[in-house]
Length: 197
Image (cartoon, rainbow, N blue to C red; front, side):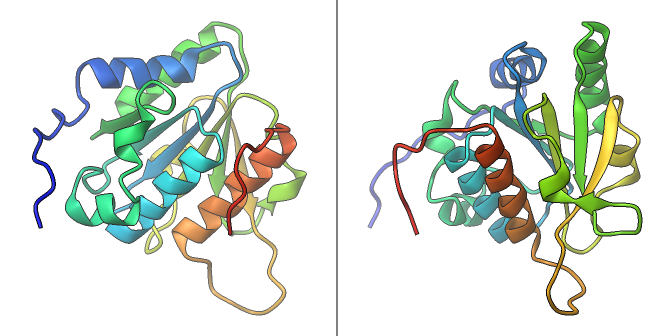
């Protein structure tokens, strides 16, 4: 039955956008996850859960599905309602807005590496990447991968792959993103307060 009714947040375009984008430019070693054209609600929700559980500073959804849709809410187990200032979720329609923020970070003389999940030639195994640096982790759609806008982002772009034991075209976007996030959390030495399977 109906438990509660509330007004949907205004697409996170005002105060929450400002808060979330500020988290990217903070000097406390941000780990921002950029969901680049992730349009499958199941993948989106799963990634939001992984981001929250594994310590992402903020999440930026660029030209992606609605983070507040019912399917994403179910898949994320409602984690959007608990993130608040801990892990703001920003909804953008264009990479140009994100370029401005990443450019600000660079101009402040802090190195921001852009780690793009990409299994193409020239990518390096994810465990060889230094996730202790300020990082923006880009997860593209399962159908198309990361966009050209992602690989051309201001900052040092590193393409990460997940080595496979058997021949497989690719992993599910949510699975790949979660694997990389788990490695980032391990390297950053985050102390876990909860154990989960």
